[in-house]
Length: 222
Length: 226
Image (tube, rainbow over all chains, first blue to last red; front, side, top):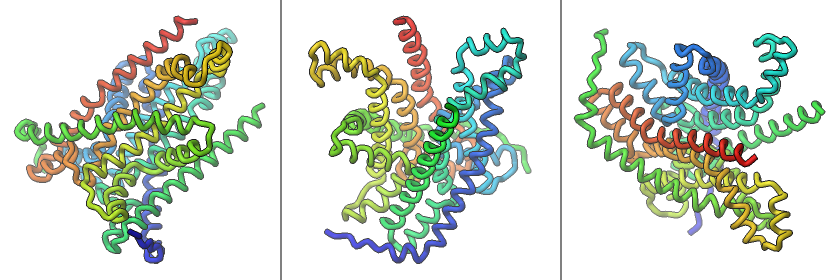
């Protein structure tokens, strides 16, 4: 049997989908920035010698990494307000959940990057009489950051894909708008394929751009 | 507002529903993990192959499924695919296909990465003593590559279990969906969502601990060989 593709109707309502795409970007970019800052704080807490700081960080990181994002979102949107007596809007709940979730993953990436540095680097710096913070800033971090870039990007991509979860609490992201529109026009194939393509193009172009920039950076370094 | 009072008894009262949901979660997870092992090796071999006839379709498949959200894949197989082929599709199968194909793509990349990580010298040495391609693969490369594939594959299985929760969005009665239905009927969202999060934690954390243990063990082993 032949299915007749009909993209014309979909393009007529492009503004609905574009509005959803902006929603996706709004959630994704804000969570990425907050998640990176939060991840840095969590990583420093986790590496601290004080258990009062490191233990809560460990529990938070492990819990947010091993439970599904969707249950975290439901928990923060539906469950937490009952206890603390403050209700969040859908957007706030999405930002909180995605930021904390990605902060947990980013924290482990930062920590692994710093831990991956050889002991001799620390010893060499100390032998030259550098203080702990100078050593960190001038020797360890510049090298460690280079190693953190690939896993950091991979996680950012996971975050962008994870934003589709927010449609489950009716935040108007691209997927939510698409499902709404496909129920109205009854054109699920065209609309959902288009949405998948939007993500595919966005992520593929970003990763190509990043690879290009990395190559340029490496070339400049030599 | 009134002070909130915990009442976790509701969780125990309805525990049969939660266990039923957990059963479906496990069912989905196990089928997906097994499929991703088999599919990952097949597609991964295609991705590794130098023959374009195998390499290009495998690469396209992996890139497509890794660069789109798994939730869209599930929803696509639930709403779009049945219209395209003209059959009804139950949510359970749509979730199975969507998450399964996604996991296969990631596993294939793990397989390819594992084989590629084995130094070229190994190939050359094995060929020099007269082994053919398949014996080199089976007796020299794969035994070493498999060890390197196990840790990333273990963390992928955690992702698979987590991803099954997305099936709740198309009304598959797995753990999260059962919990959602209960939370809406008995209006105890805090207790129920907390209980579900804890159940997911207990379902995945053994796998996480296993991966930590593996990492330590493999690290020690490789050090000892030096």
